[in-house]
Image 1 (cartoon, rainbow, N blue to C red):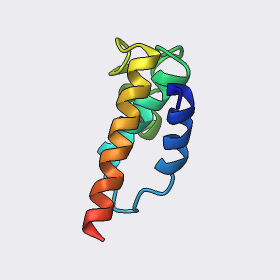
Image 2: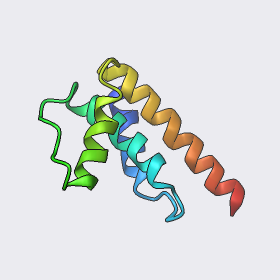
Image 3: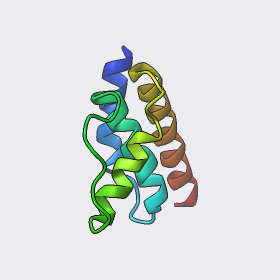
Length: 90
């Protein structure tokens, strides 16, 4: 399976992660997803009164040095790990 196809497959699987997934983990996945699909941050940082979007922007910015392919690989690995942990806990 090509990296792009595998990434899209795991992006769909990420939507099935348990509700107990932490916000910190969700931000990591968000940042990797944005880096993999768009590339480096292309917007200005949201204002202080928009904390939710600011956290998301910061998460994306933290992966700015990764290539799109590297971000895809890391995203796939993280979702695999989370799915395995969820299955083990069930």
